[in-house]
Length: 432
Image (cartoon, rainbow, N blue to C red; front, side, top):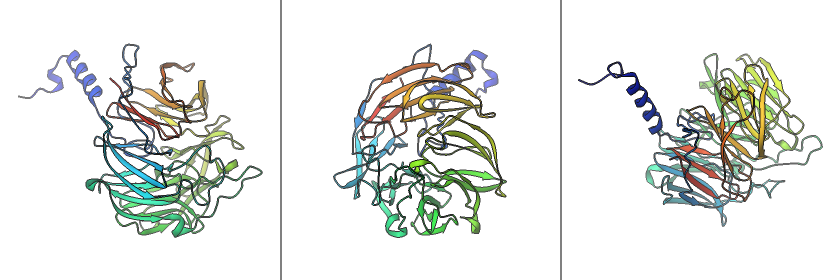
């Protein structure tokens, strides 16, 4: 007869739970992780006052780019640019052994790019994985949208170029700031049979494509230029599936259901100097967290209704210029110049501290810790605000890379951390 947990002594049940949690391995198949919100179901490894982070076990550089890696079924997929081509490379996630690569002609910058070209180059969009078709979707800086068959060494299934097809113009100047256009930076999003992409064309800000063929299915009624964020995010309003994107002009929420796909639900003005709406919106129930710096230096929580009503629940004069916020319990965190913590219910800042530089990303772990990849290659382990209510508590840190800003987001998968810098250098560290 099999044993149920009720048959075991309590200390045995606890040990089973601890071992089960420690052994749990999870993929990282999308921008910002499995649920696209910076959360991992894996633990940080913090035990008895120590962070058992091993030495670098492998490293690779396939070319420049700020695209983050994705990890699926023991394989890591990385996008980079070198020698006039974008390279999609599949590695064994544990050993770093290259499995295959697909290369295609590509520009180093978008064709109408201007400004800050010493700070970035190559693909900035993170690949999107679809489990139903075992396909990977990539978007290059110059608008090359590809679908790759992972079951067949990454064979190309279809391709289209968004600049060729939709002629998105250069982003306009904002106020008196310099003009900025970084090309296509937004990660695609698969919802059911549709690949959703922020195109930023005069014929539609957001478009939906058949994920199997690349055929356009719908386009948004709104037609603002694209923002420079990490990508569209999904949300549900009164039972209706929608997506939100922080475009050039502000927050845009559209429907994606049936014959009403592309209809505008709500818009909220938020036009940042240098067109730098960068941080990805964070969905919290029926609300969205937005943040930026420059002339709109704040964080705000906006409650969205299907009838288009937007209520500002709170605003705080703090900002994240780059780091996309992550929610852990009732606390909102981000890393920009410092690590910040805010009560998501009220907008009250609980603490800020440390030094992070301009670049940074945070992920939340199952044991209620935060892992940060910040500045020019610093890795941090941070205590949550429930256990450290009055100040930032930095549990551990390690300096790993010192070349360029850590624009790509840190990834946790199968008890390994993957960190990349803007020069394209990728390193893998085990949590032992």
